[in-house]
Length: 368
Image (cartoon, rainbow, N blue to C red; front, side):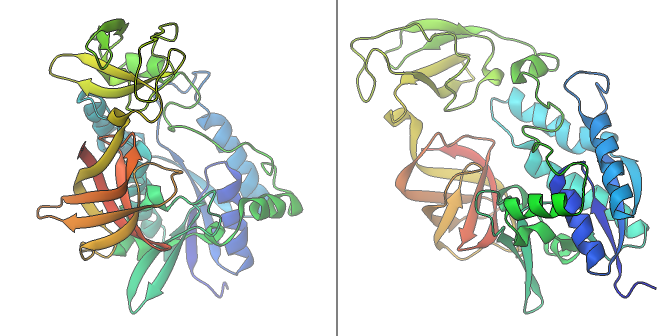
């Protein structure tokens, strides 16, 4: 008999979830692996790795000595994540589907399935931690600051966190790789996955072309001069430098950090007039924001933190930046930044921190 309860681990085929399963089994848990298939529109496509990922996950389960089940959440993913992803892009915003996938699939559909299998907890290979304090659950940053994924998990609720384990959140990535090699996992040296799961390594614009119609229009600089043509505003994001098609344009009169060889950046998308506004120079004022408004707030504690000064991220892999929070009614909040933030992007998440504690956040609706 196992001395510890059943834990269902989301095995992705990657090394982090594999080591997660190993660590839990070593601690005496009754471990079951689940491989989640969330996308099936192009299984045979060269960019879709789900078939190979399942082979890797099954190989891991065999080495560790646990059962693995293949579960298809593609319908839930399309309805709850992908449909919203397309709506946001069509509205000119830049959504983060990984945030929604965690809240709606990995810690909702998957969690529900695991409970039906008799699990007391679920576990994933995310670099984050959960701490119980006074009967409440806190979401903490992973100890490896270069891999911390709390940004993507900020919408998790008390109920979800109470059922979740993040074993590798206590480790550095190098230690996870070492453990994987030590126990002979077949994916010990597998490259980390990047990008959005349903897009894989394919060119992003090629993928969006299949779902969003093109509406080409002018590209204008800060003086209002037309300097190129865009392929449709949905295909661009604030701060974007590559793929603008205007790399050869030189402007000896460019001001404010520009110069004739300075690169161009997307600074604004005028949806009403279908104009893409670009500027020269990374630190151009049009790219900097001293405040933002966010909607659809979700707070880990179940309620908004008190108004005051916190750390914040407006994009993943960004260092925490000081901000002043003013929580408004109806799930909205306002942030002021003592130091202007670069390329604050509507559709992305603004996430708040109190030291190592992730408090939650919301979806950026506007900036100023």
